[in-house]
Image (cartoon, rainbow, N blue to C red; front, side, top):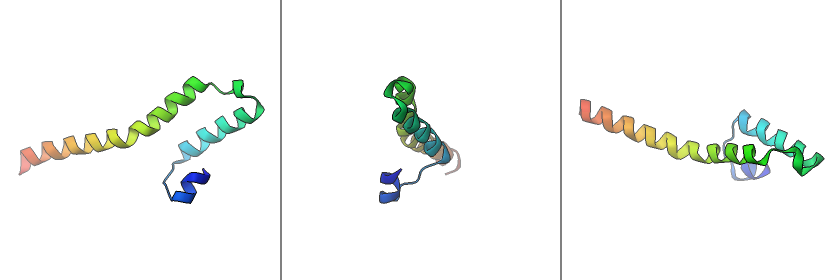
Length: 68
């Protein structure tokens, strides 16, 4: 969270809550966190922006072909 606030990056409440839960679990002991699930969550976060861009481009192309 410090890096996101330093660089002014937007984060959702889901990002904050999920990373907080992982952080608390990791301070107890590293095995308390299911790292496979955490990796899947991070992968989904990284994939969200390009996927949203691809969907937007597809919708734009379809509308552009139909309307203009």
